Length: 168
Image (cartoon, rainbow, N blue to C red):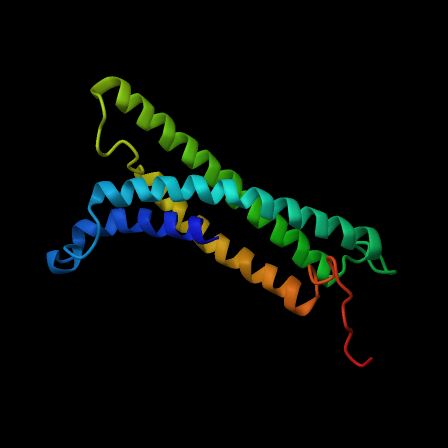
């Protein structure tokens, strides 16, 4: 989450930087540095999200196996709804972020072949910045749902230790 948030924030900074006063931008890293940091943070964010997704899948499978998704009336349980929403949102964020990283990588490779090492090779295109803003909001919402799963429903707390239930 930290890498993805950094990448999305640096992409947003890339767009608003020309409109910022020079007294403020003089304290920031150069455009080339923030562009490259954003690119690598995006790649690391996608890469480090994969183990998180794997552990989430393991927890979800345990929950579904033990409790099921539906109650006796055939309605989806509230916990299951949160679980499905959390999984879908985070999967979309990871997949689209990976695709954006790949497109930036492909564009930078073409720039390198055409002109030699271009200092702005990893610069995000305008649509990528817009997507980053949407993905950032989705990431925060997905994290909120993950917190709901952990703190309201106790998911993830039973791995490797006994859970102490209230009123016991």
